[in-house]
Structures are given as C-alpha cells and as structure tokens.
Length: 294
Image (cartoon, rainbow, N blue to C red):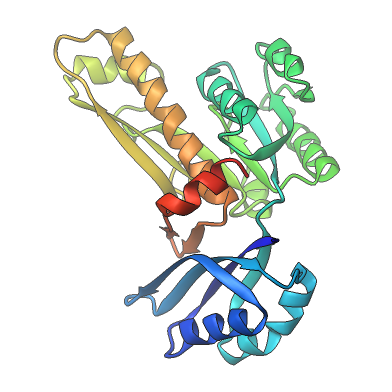
C-alpha cells in the first residue's frame, strides 16, 4: 500500500486532530504514526501523521480532497510520498569526517537520500566522491569571486533540483542572499564550544581550559552565523587524562552522529520551524525501521 506523511502547521484550535483523523478514515487511510504539539507560548499547532492508503489514493487526490479541512483551520499543510527520496547536495572543505560518515550511511541504506552532488572549495575528496559514482563539483571561493562562486553553487542546486544542502564542515560563510533563498533548506554542523572558543584549533583551546564536555550542534543556516534554529545536539564526556588529539577524535565522532540525525529528521519531515526554534518529532520504534530503509 502507498505510504504517505501529512505535515500540518496552524494556529491552535479545538478539533484539528479529529478533523484530520476523520478525513483520513473517509479516504480509506490507516494511520501508522502520529505526533502533535501545541505551543502554548506562540499559539501554534504542529502535527505529523504517517499513514497507508488502502484505496491507492495519490498525493494529488489527497491534497485536493483535503482542501476544505485545511481551509477551515487555515493550515499550512503538505502531503509527502514516503517512498520518494529527498535530493541532497553535500558541501565540504578539508575536514572529511562528516562527508565520509554520510557516504557510508547512504551506501548501506541507513540514510535514505539521493545524493545528487558534492560541492567543495578544495580537491581533497574528489576521488572519494567520484568512486561513489556521485558528481563532484570543484568551486573555489575567494573574497574576490564569492558572488560568482555562490552563483555556480545555485546553478548546481537548480540543475539537480536539490531540496536540501548539507554543510558537512564546509568552511565558508554563505551570503545573506543565499541563506534567504534556501531558507529552511540548508543544514550545518559545528562544535558546541561557540562562542567560548572561536577561530583556529577550538579543541586545543578546550583542552587548555580543561573542558569536560564536548558537544556538537546541527542547525538550519540563517544570515546570523551559527545561530539558526537548532535541530539536533549531543555531547560526549572527556577527562583530564585525554590529549588534545583525543578531544579532536571524540569531537569529530559526535559531529558526524549529530549531523546524520538532523538530516534523518529533516528528510522525513519531522522538523518544523517555530520562530527561532524547531519542533522535532521523534520517530516511534515501530516507524523508525521503515524510515531508515526508505
């Protein structure tokens, strides 16, 4: 049976869940997973529903039939085919741990995406990418050519119909124009020392200060550098007995894991923007296996 997901954002109101459940039942659909959240502070309602169509209904039919329900609650809503893989571009500079981790997860089916291109401002990972039969685009960036470089990046986005850009340790600041154009469609990863340890060698700075926790943050990219809505975070403990290189190794591991989890949540439409924050619905144990394998 076809499997779909419905995502809904609207103002809080009585009867939303009942209206959605009744609609799906009338359309011959069986709900397999459902999550919702009422934000009492913003007055917003968020919901994600996974369901199977026992009648073989198409996205177009469901979207059209849902019109009156959506209009009644002034919903921002969309139906998604859960078998369709999101087209993703990965951007990387000279630190390849996140790129290699994503390629591995993609190759074994743990991250069901369609990697349509890898873009880099260096040539370090060309061979790795090409060996995975993925197009590699070398686009160098300098202060003088940055507008032209970003124009070339957007050409790749348009040509591939990419729906998401992943900055897998891409060490270039994107322009405000590109951030606005791709709003909600660029995910970044960085260590969680900011703003304590900026600049070069943050892990060495952390070691010298006796830091006991190393963390990583994955977030949507906005014009405010490293301050976009947070999707996923995690930490790992370190001790006085560990060296600066241990800090780096552990930090890279947690960065890779956090980025992969953030992408997984995004591609399965489990992340909702809520002002400067996000609402992230976790996959239930029963639904995670099917999501994992697409």
